[in-house]
Length: 285
Image (cartoon, one colour):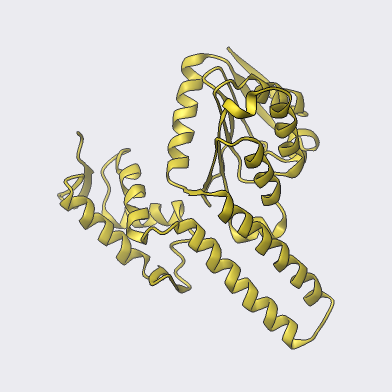
């Protein structure tokens, strides 16, 4: 069954969260404190929080965190209440999808924010057909697999750094002193570096790009140039042509195309892809 969903849809959001018995999937670029509090309140009323696996796919990029569009500390609180929480950081995520088990899904224009649930004029559909819900969950989870899993320690570090950076920025905005501007610039670079380090999670760039290559070639064969363009869209923060960051001995930024080619050769040697007539093909098992 498919129903149309108009704003405000906060009650539908609460109902979906309460319906989850084994798993809850949330895909939203922006995540606010008030919806997180609603999830915590619902999960705390019963034993639900102990048993439900919560998958959150979101954007933890610099601008998102500094603007307050996503409240990282609220995400940390959710993870504290739901011990089986997995958070995936995917900068290019734009889908707003909420799924409870394989029983109920909401696909909407609304982010998981107070504005998205109650103030903005949003629109979406609520789906209870099991086969459709299963398909939606699988598709969105496949997006999430391209992102980086962020543990609570890393999440709390990003939260603390964002808070500190916003404090310094407020001081800079009130002052014309050069040393404050320099201090803000230094901390901004440190923050950007830590975000990339968190995104990489100890993996080399070519290892991250290998997953993206397999994902893209599963759709259709592609030439290297097309792969480059699409990988840059999937991982814009790791494919920044304007900067070369060396983090833990690995290059992130300007040399990303070299890392993509390295990934292609590794996949080719492993028998996972092959080049035929100028197009890369995924080798089917």
